[in-house]
Image (tube, rainbow over all chains, first blue to last red):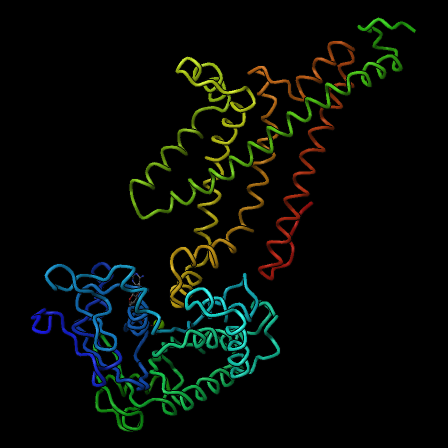
Length: 269
Length: 238
Ligand SMILES: Nc1ncnc2c1ncn2[C@@H]1O[C@H](COP(=O)(O)OP(=O)(O)OP(=O)(O)O)[C@@H](O)[C@H]1O
Ligand SMILES: [Mg+2]
């Protein structure tokens, strides 16, 4: 099959970006949220998405986490079609659950409202998926989970119920839970915006450690411009379902070119 | 004192009491029948509630539709008629069940239909973010259900299940219509032999109250355990 001329675009290899949105359209009814969006995130790159409320930042992350489906276009991960799979005659058809399940392991997500499982203690929140999904030995999973809880500064809370933790602590457990699956790509959706101000710093410190101590690909939506400046390689400004402007944080925050970006930054900074 | 079995001296408490003690074995047998019908009926109802409740949330229209039809049918036709049908009409069609089995099946179908709404509602009430977090951890649909959704939905089901269970218990006297001698039937026999209507029916009230209360205590216990697992305060109302 070396000469297979399948129209399936595969660009595997080291050169392939971690994530590529190819002319992605997302509509809810007649509300077009993403309008033929092209987007690339390199391997190990840290990208921050900024933009006004309702501009589709969360939608991008949810499409990648397979919590939503694209209306048109294709999402690629590591050079392979992700939202789609080769169907009859090599044509791309929308991915089925099996295709998605085999691939979504590479991606992890931390949610704005933590979404810890209240029916499990803190340690079990971090070990259940590795045990059941990755088939990891329970002792090994617990050992690793303790390491991760230590990383997020919660080694002493492993037997607590999530509901007994502060918001900041819950979010740090959620970060440990996501990391326990060893994702290549981590999605962070306004992970500090549901927290009391005094708890924000603790969570951001943990994320800074992760950003500086690993080579994970990060795609985050945040209103914490200081954090975005610290960790991102690139900042993307969104509006109207498209990328308005993109560049290194110094430039986007320091001398934005686009009027829309200046306006937005003026309002949030 | 007369040893004539049919005492008519309602005014004579001692003789009435003797009759009552003599009849204890048959009342006890009736009580056992009532308990059996309740427990077996509830077990079948629980099973059907889950099957129909899960079917009601299926993505396939046919599965969802069949659940809907079964639920509406058994909620919409009376328990009384269903029991008669199982007992008198099925044998005509060539199936014969022992009377207790007819009762258990009727209770199971009827309360299973009501229970399926409880199951469906409780599953739907688990916040969407919980399922999404489970997807983000790459759990399979079955793992999401077993590890995340069901353990959170279950405590919600217990109080409404308790209500249905007690209603089921209170419907069990209907069984006497298909020749089953439950505790109400036996107590009624006793009433007619002793003529002591007040005592017999008072005892009956006590029997049902104690049974219902025992069920409630057991269900509250279950609820406390289930809620403690979720780290919620045990909100059991005795
Ligand atoms: N499930 C849904 N059904 C219908 N419309 C939706 C749904 N989810 C999102 N939308 C719409 O899509 C648009 C983009 O939403 P999205 O959550 O991606 O914005 P956002 O950029 O993350 O905004 P915010 O900063 O407020 O979080 C909004 O107009 C929203 O109303
Ligand atoms: Mg958002």
